[in-house]
Image (cartoon, rainbow, N blue to C red):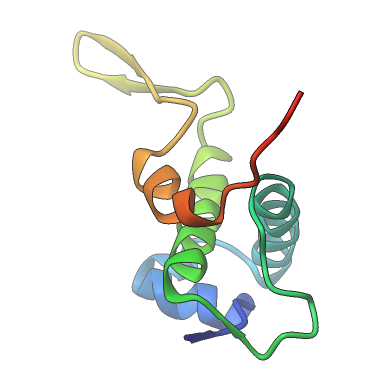
Length: 106
């Protein structure tokens, strides 16, 4: 079990890349992605002291993706000879969250 993901844990996960964003940006991205994950998955209560490792890893990836996409508002990355559209989802996040996904009925 991992500790509850917070800004410090997100920064540690990103390592040197974390210097690209401010604490406020991390706080905003973490709050948004935590809520997004909670809508799609069964997550521990806010008062829990530990999270499953795979769910925490997925949240770190969500935060990193959120921050990285801020520099690509149209989801297009320029490359030589044109542009590449960045996908709207991450297959690794889907894989990590799969055991926790909420089942919608009806």
